[in-house]
Picture 1 (cartoon, helix red, strand yellow):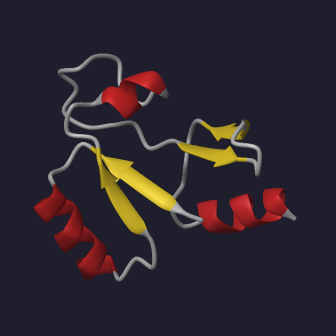
Picture 2: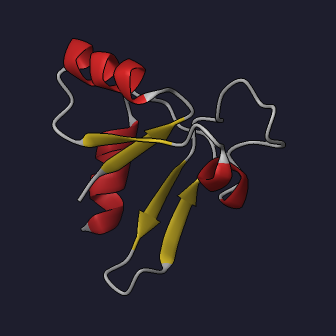
Length: 83
């Protein structure tokens, strides 16, 4: 399962998902709670989250943290790690 999250509103995330035809859902973290918990933002006033990814294993544990993500290369990197 793939999930994305941002600090955007539901309407903004819906438009973004439709514009880029994402096959996965985008979660709204407008209160920045997940962003703060996962280190994607330094404080609750952050304008946007850092582009980071987390690979979660079947038991719900963080298996890998991708602290710097290049969007064009990232899907292949994650798929390689899953294999």
